[in-house]
Image 1: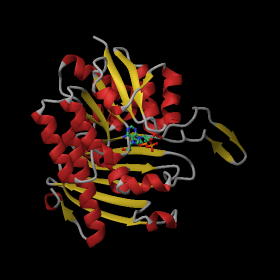
Image 2: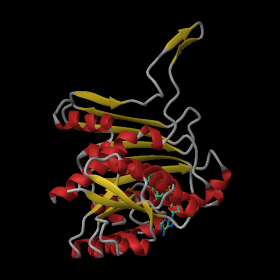
Image 3: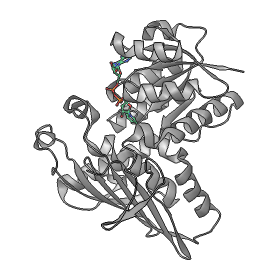
Amino acid sequence: MTLNFAILGAGRIGQVHARAVAGTPGARLVAIADPVAAAAEVVKAAYGCDIRSIDAILASKDVDAVVICTPTDTHADLIERFVKAGKAVFCEKPVDLSLARVAACLKVVKAEKGTLMVGFNRRFDPDFMAVKAAIDAGQIGAVEMVTITSRDPGAPPHDYITRSGGIFRDMTIHDFDMARWLLGEEVETVQAAASVLTDPKIGELGDYDSVNVILRTASGRQAIITNSRRAAYGYDQRIEVLGSSGMVAAQNHGEHRMTFADKSGFHDAPLLNFFMTRYIAAYANEIAAFVGAVQHGTATPTTGEDGLMALALAEAALKSVAEGRSVKLSEVM
Ligand SMILES: NC(=O)c1ccc[n+]([C@@H]2O[C@H](COP(=O)([O-])OP(=O)(O)OC[C@H]3O[C@@H](n4cnc5c(N)ncnc54)[C@H](O)[C@@H]3O)[C@@H](O)[C@H]2O)c1
């Protein structure tokens, strides 16, 4: 059965998902919605789909599933409306900026027996999947320490930052999800530090651009996350997991794998510049996983509950920064 898709929002990530849907066997891109006509036209021109309003998509019998790629503050309402309309929903992270709103939204999804997958694309990156497979196969023994380095090449536009909920809910949320996945145990305490080092305007908007977080599980496993909104050398995405009998790591991706050497040393290719290129395979894999789950009626590999837990870690990190102490996850849940 072919799954017919509509994409809501034709911005940065909407265009990435349009490409993934169009390239996934068993999926067909039927429609795009965006109030900015020029943005919708880009997707229509590339994939030959219709441009429709949200209301028209809700009523469309030829749409089975939607991918929500609109600004964060629209996600929870859209999830509820589309689940009630009987559509399978893939929603970009985060589900909402309020834990209470996420919980209420998940209740609606459950009551409607709806399908909701949350876009934690990094779980579908081939390198990180290999790391996880090595852990699950016992290749490094028991997991003890996870180190996640995640630095963006540059900050998003200021108006995006205003609606994003801040760095912990917008950016670190991916790393919180990765940490939960790799630790294999729920986090008990969160300690965070945050600064504005790259752009004073980000501070004026009430956000941070440079953060470090230490997560600890009940058994003592730890994860360290280091984030910056600026890495002058490109999109820096590395993971290392230390276990009782070894270590497994995934390194950065360059534009190519050629190295040349001269008197000044060895030179590698520049890093892939951002998520749109670095995670192409991950976005394709996550849409394929969503299609598979809907077609076979199985659980989606990432869920609304994963979205809730990652947001709770972001809330705990914010509280830790505000109060200058280690915060138990139970204090914010
Ligand atoms: N998983 C990831 O790697 C990843 C990467 C980037 C963004 N995101 C998430 O995706 C969401 C969108 O981010 P973005 O960077 O693409 O933003 P963006 O600003 O580039 O795009 C958002 C688009 O949505 C459109 N829009 C606004 N309201 C709409 C509505 N009611 N219906 C339809 N379209 C509407 C806007 O006109 C715009 O074109 C955010 O929640 C963000 O957190 C996830």
